[in-house]
Amino acid sequence: MEVLHCTTFTSAVGPLFLAASERGLAALEFDVRLPGQQTIRPNPRDLRAEGGPREIRFDESAADLRGYTRELEEYFAGARREFGFALDLRGTPFQLDCWRALLRIPYGETRTYADIARAIGKPQAFRAVGMANNRNPVAIVVPCHRVIASDGTLCGYGGGLEIKRKLLELEGALSGTLAA
Picture (cartoon, rainbow, N blue to C red):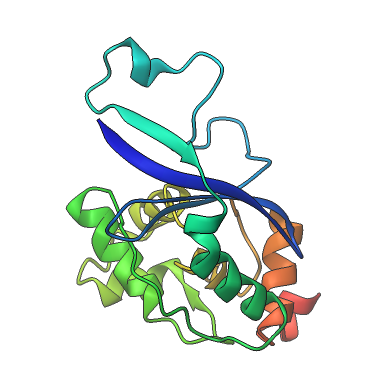
Protein backbone atom coordinates (compact mmCIF):
# COMPACT_ATOMS: atom_id res chain seq x y z
CA MET A 1 0.00 0.00 0.00
CA GLU A 2 1.34 3.40 -0.97
CA VAL A 3 1.47 6.12 1.69
CA LEU A 4 0.93 9.75 0.70
CA HIS A 5 1.58 12.48 3.23
CA CYS A 6 -1.12 15.15 3.04
CA THR A 7 -2.29 18.42 4.50
CA THR A 8 -4.67 21.25 3.82
CA PHE A 9 -2.99 24.61 3.32
CA THR A 10 -4.77 27.95 3.62
CA SER A 11 -3.74 30.11 0.68
CA ALA A 12 -4.66 33.47 -0.81
CA VAL A 13 -7.11 31.64 -3.11
CA GLY A 14 -8.64 29.45 -0.42
CA PRO A 15 -7.85 26.04 1.09
CA LEU A 16 -5.60 23.75 -0.95
CA PHE A 17 -5.20 20.00 -0.42
CA LEU A 18 -1.62 18.75 -0.90
CA ALA A 19 -0.43 15.15 -1.08
CA ALA A 20 3.13 13.96 -1.62
CA SER A 21 4.90 10.67 -2.10
CA GLU A 22 8.58 9.98 -1.54
CA ARG A 23 9.11 11.07 -5.19
CA GLY A 24 7.48 14.50 -4.85
CA LEU A 25 4.22 16.43 -4.87
CA ALA A 26 1.49 14.20 -6.33
CA ALA A 27 -1.53 16.43 -5.81
CA LEU A 28 -2.42 20.05 -5.22
CA GLU A 29 -6.19 20.40 -5.38
CA PHE A 30 -8.60 23.22 -4.66
CA ASP A 31 -10.78 22.53 -1.66
CA VAL A 32 -13.90 23.26 -3.70
CA ARG A 33 -14.00 21.30 -6.94
CA LEU A 34 -16.37 21.47 -9.84
CA PRO A 35 -18.79 18.51 -10.30
CA GLY A 36 -17.05 15.54 -11.89
CA GLN A 37 -13.58 16.92 -11.27
CA GLN A 38 -10.97 14.27 -10.58
CA THR A 39 -9.41 14.00 -7.11
CA ILE A 40 -6.78 11.92 -5.40
CA ARG A 41 -8.01 12.63 -1.89
CA PRO A 42 -9.92 10.25 0.31
CA ASN A 43 -13.66 10.49 0.60
CA PRO A 44 -16.22 9.15 3.09
CA ARG A 45 -16.87 6.12 0.89
CA ASP A 46 -13.29 5.40 -0.05
CA LEU A 47 -13.52 3.26 -3.19
CA ARG A 48 -9.79 2.51 -3.00
CA ALA A 49 -10.52 0.54 0.17
CA GLU A 50 -12.97 -1.59 -1.84
CA GLY A 51 -10.20 -3.22 -3.84
CA GLY A 52 -9.40 -0.59 -6.44
CA PRO A 53 -6.36 -1.12 -8.66
CA ARG A 54 -4.12 0.94 -6.40
CA GLU A 55 -4.45 1.32 -2.69
CA ILE A 56 -3.35 4.57 -1.10
CA ARG A 57 -3.21 5.45 2.55
CA PHE A 58 -3.21 9.14 3.44
CA ASP A 59 -1.11 10.26 6.38
CA GLU A 60 -2.05 13.76 7.61
CA SER A 61 1.29 15.46 8.19
CA ALA A 62 1.72 19.21 7.81
CA ALA A 63 5.35 18.86 8.94
CA ASP A 64 6.23 16.48 6.08
CA LEU A 65 4.76 18.95 3.58
CA ARG A 66 6.32 22.10 5.04
CA GLY A 67 8.80 22.49 2.17
CA TYR A 68 5.91 22.55 -0.29
CA THR A 69 3.75 24.92 1.72
CA ARG A 70 6.70 27.28 2.31
CA GLU A 71 7.25 27.64 -1.43
CA LEU A 72 3.52 28.16 -1.97
CA GLU A 73 3.53 30.91 0.68
CA GLU A 74 6.42 32.56 -1.16
CA TYR A 75 4.56 32.27 -4.47
CA PHE A 76 1.41 33.89 -3.06
CA ALA A 77 3.53 36.65 -1.47
CA GLY A 78 4.99 37.43 -4.91
CA ALA A 79 8.47 36.31 -3.84
CA ARG A 80 8.67 33.08 -5.90
CA ARG A 81 8.25 32.59 -9.64
CA GLU A 82 9.38 28.95 -9.93
CA PHE A 83 8.94 25.98 -7.63
CA GLY A 84 12.02 24.01 -6.65
CA PHE A 85 10.51 20.79 -5.36
CA ALA A 86 10.09 17.48 -7.17
CA LEU A 87 6.80 16.40 -8.70
CA ASP A 88 5.29 12.93 -8.82
CA LEU A 89 3.00 13.40 -11.82
CA ARG A 90 0.69 10.48 -12.56
CA GLY A 91 -1.14 10.28 -15.85
CA THR A 92 -1.18 8.90 -19.36
CA PRO A 93 1.78 9.58 -21.66
CA PHE A 94 -0.32 12.23 -23.47
CA GLN A 95 -1.28 13.93 -20.19
CA LEU A 96 2.34 13.91 -19.03
CA ASP A 97 3.42 15.54 -22.31
CA CYS A 98 0.78 18.24 -21.82
CA TRP A 99 1.72 18.85 -18.18
CA ARG A 100 5.42 19.09 -19.06
CA ALA A 101 4.52 21.68 -21.71
CA LEU A 102 2.61 23.63 -19.05
CA LEU A 103 5.70 23.62 -16.86
CA ARG A 104 7.56 25.40 -19.68
CA ILE A 105 5.14 28.38 -19.73
CA PRO A 106 7.06 31.23 -18.09
CA TYR A 107 5.68 33.01 -15.05
CA GLY A 108 3.64 36.02 -16.14
CA GLU A 109 2.87 34.64 -19.59
CA THR A 110 -0.05 32.73 -21.10
CA ARG A 111 -0.48 30.22 -23.91
CA THR A 112 -3.52 28.87 -25.74
CA TYR A 113 -4.65 25.27 -25.90
CA ALA A 114 -3.57 25.31 -29.55
CA ASP A 115 -0.10 26.53 -28.50
CA ILE A 116 0.22 23.58 -26.10
CA ALA A 117 -1.00 21.15 -28.78
CA ARG A 118 1.68 22.43 -31.17
CA ALA A 119 4.32 22.31 -28.42
CA ILE A 120 3.71 18.58 -27.90
CA GLY A 121 3.71 17.88 -31.64
CA LYS A 122 -0.05 17.25 -31.95
CA PRO A 123 -1.39 20.49 -33.47
CA GLN A 124 -4.95 19.20 -33.92
CA ALA A 125 -5.24 17.93 -30.34
CA PHE A 126 -6.22 21.22 -28.69
CA ARG A 127 -9.45 19.76 -27.26
CA ALA A 128 -7.55 16.80 -25.84
CA VAL A 129 -5.07 19.28 -24.35
CA GLY A 130 -8.03 20.94 -22.64
CA MET A 131 -9.06 17.59 -21.15
CA ALA A 132 -5.48 16.93 -19.99
CA ASN A 133 -5.49 20.35 -18.30
CA ASN A 134 -8.77 19.42 -16.62
CA ARG A 135 -7.05 16.32 -15.21
CA ASN A 136 -3.95 18.18 -14.00
CA PRO A 137 -3.36 16.77 -10.49
CA VAL A 138 -1.00 19.54 -9.34
CA ALA A 139 -2.78 22.87 -9.80
CA ILE A 140 -0.81 26.13 -9.64
CA VAL A 141 2.60 24.39 -9.69
CA VAL A 142 1.79 22.78 -13.05
CA PRO A 143 0.37 26.08 -14.29
CA CYS A 144 -2.76 25.20 -16.23
CA HIS A 145 -4.09 28.60 -15.10
CA ARG A 146 -1.73 30.10 -17.71
CA VAL A 147 -3.72 28.52 -20.56
CA ILE A 148 -6.36 30.67 -22.21
CA ALA A 149 -8.77 30.40 -25.15
CA SER A 150 -7.53 31.14 -28.67
CA ASP A 151 -9.57 34.37 -28.69
CA GLY A 152 -7.58 35.59 -25.68
CA THR A 153 -10.31 35.15 -23.08
CA LEU A 154 -10.25 33.23 -19.83
CA CYS A 155 -11.83 29.80 -20.04
CA GLY A 156 -12.41 26.78 -17.82
CA TYR A 157 -10.40 26.23 -14.68
CA GLY A 158 -10.75 23.62 -11.94
CA GLY A 159 -10.70 26.22 -9.19
CA GLY A 160 -13.13 28.47 -11.05
CA LEU A 161 -12.51 31.47 -13.28
CA GLU A 162 -12.22 33.89 -10.35
CA ILE A 163 -9.26 31.94 -8.94
CA LYS A 164 -7.72 31.72 -12.42
CA ARG A 165 -8.05 35.50 -12.70
CA LYS A 166 -6.44 35.98 -9.25
CA LEU A 167 -3.48 33.75 -10.15
CA LEU A 168 -2.93 35.57 -13.45
CA GLU A 169 -3.19 38.94 -11.65
CA LEU A 170 -0.61 37.77 -9.10
CA GLU A 171 1.73 36.84 -11.96
CA GLY A 172 1.08 40.08 -13.88
CA ALA A 173 -0.34 38.17 -16.85
CA LEU A 174 -3.68 39.96 -17.16
CA SER A 175 -3.90 42.40 -20.02
CA GLY A 176 -6.23 43.34 -22.86
CA THR A 177 -9.06 40.87 -23.28
CA LEU A 178 -8.06 38.90 -20.19
CA ALA A 179 -8.55 41.88 -17.90
CA ALA A 180 -11.96 42.71 -19.35
